[in-house]
Every structure is written in structure tokens, then in C-alpha cells.
Length: 23
Image (cartoon, rainbow, N blue to C red):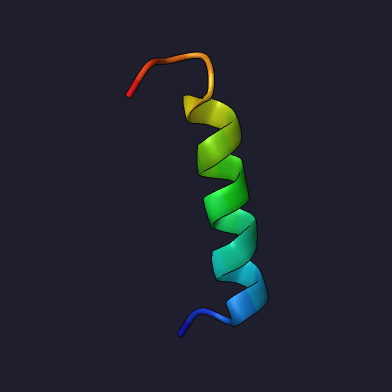
């Protein structure tokens, strides 16, 4: 089970990784 903090962190990391690429 994911905590809200983990989900938020994961979304933030994914956004940081995906930022250079146009989606």
C-alpha cells in the first residue's frame, strides 16, 4: 500500500524525469 507521501514523491520524480521529453 502506498502512502500519499510516496505517491506524491513518485509523481514528482516521474515529472522530473519526463520533463525533457515532449508528451
